[in-house]
Amino acid sequence: MIEVTCAVIEKILNETSCFLVCQRSENMRLPLKWEFPGGKLEPGETKEDCLTREINEELGIKIEVNDPLTPVTHQYNFGKITLFPFLCTIKSGQIKLTEHINYVWQPISLLTELDFAPADLPIVQELKNR
Ligand SMILES: Nc1nc2c([nH]c(=O)n2[C@@H]2O[C@H](COP(=O)(O)OP(=O)(O)OP(=O)(O)O)[C@@H](O)[C@H]2O)c(=O)[nH]1
Image 1: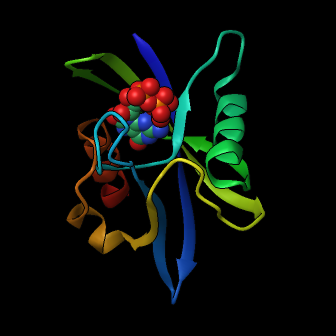
Image 2: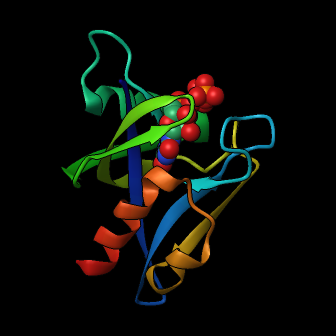
Image 3: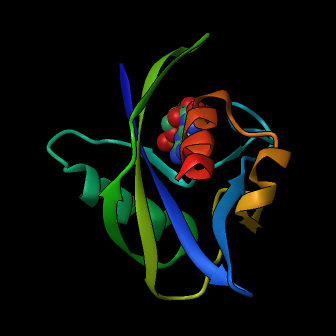
């Protein structure tokens, strides 16, 4: 079982709740799929530490990790992953992508328009149901 944390980073734009979503590159697993940024938990690391580290590595920003959302377990052909999503906000920095090819602040009403990684779909639903 692969444990992965991901950051659901919210920002209010024009009085609309928007979420930061990133597009995986062609040479990653799940090429060109959209996802919440994050990554694999390393031995001895808390989920919050993992998320802070991954987001700094992938986006060059500092975040505050807030409440957890419901974890999702998904069986891919390469293995079973459990995704641990957390609501987060940006503390400092400007986004600079190091791994993904694209990002967008997607309004909640348009979240389902994106071609998300399958494991992320329950998270998208949970956000829409809040
Ligand atoms: N960060 C992140 N990973 C996700 C999400 N949804 C999802 O299925 N994953 C999967 O979780 C796994 C671990 O993420 P990762 O981002 O550390 O993976 P990685 O770059 O090392 O890629 P790799 O799995 O090809 O080695 C990936 O296989 C990725 O496809 C998500 O929303 N965020």
